[in-house]
Amino acid sequence: MADPTDARPTGGAPSPGSIQGLFADALRETTDLARKEIALFRTEMSNNLRSLFLGLAMMVGAAVFAVVALLVLTDALVKWLATVVHSEALSALIVGAVFLVIGIGLALWGRSAMSLSTLTPTRTTRQVRQDARVLSERVSG
Image 1 (tube, helix red, strand yellow):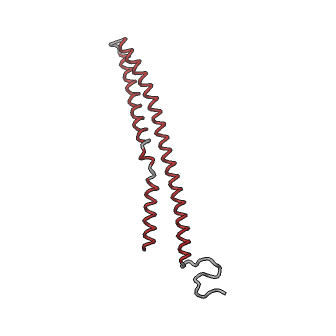
Image 2 (tube, rainbow, N blue to C red):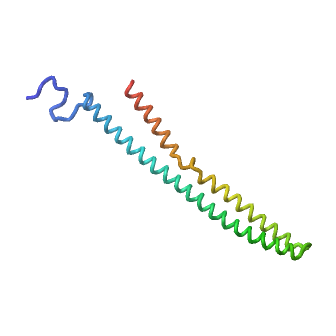
Image 3 (cartoon, rainbow, N blue to C red):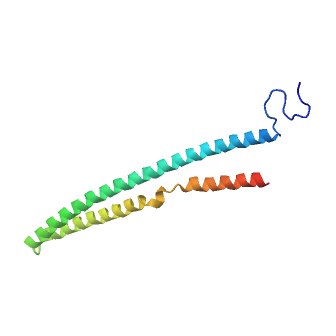
C-alpha cells in the first residue's frame, strides 16, 4: 500500500517538482551540456588544425619561392658581373627581387597562421563561461 505522504506517483518515477526529479533534470542537462561543449571543442580544434596546416603549406611555398629567388638572384649576380653594363642582369635582378618579395609575404602569412593563439579554442572557452554563468544563476535564483 502506498504511503499518502510520498510525493512520487505510483509508477516509481520521480515527480517533476520533487528533489529527485530536479536532481535528475539537472544531471541530464549537465550531461547534455558537457556533450555539446565537447562537440564544440572538437569542431573548433579541427578548424584550428586546418589553419595550422594551411600555415605550414604557406611556409613550404615560401621556402620554394625563396630558393627560386636565391637561384635567380645568384644567376643575376653572375650575369651582372660578367656583363657589367647590359640590361639582362638588371632584368634578372628584378625577377629575383619579385620572387623574394613573394617568398617573404608567404612566410609572414604562414607564420601568422601558425601562431599558438590561433590554436586556442576561444569559442569553447567563451561558451563554457557563459554556461557556467547561466547555471550559477539558475542555482542561486
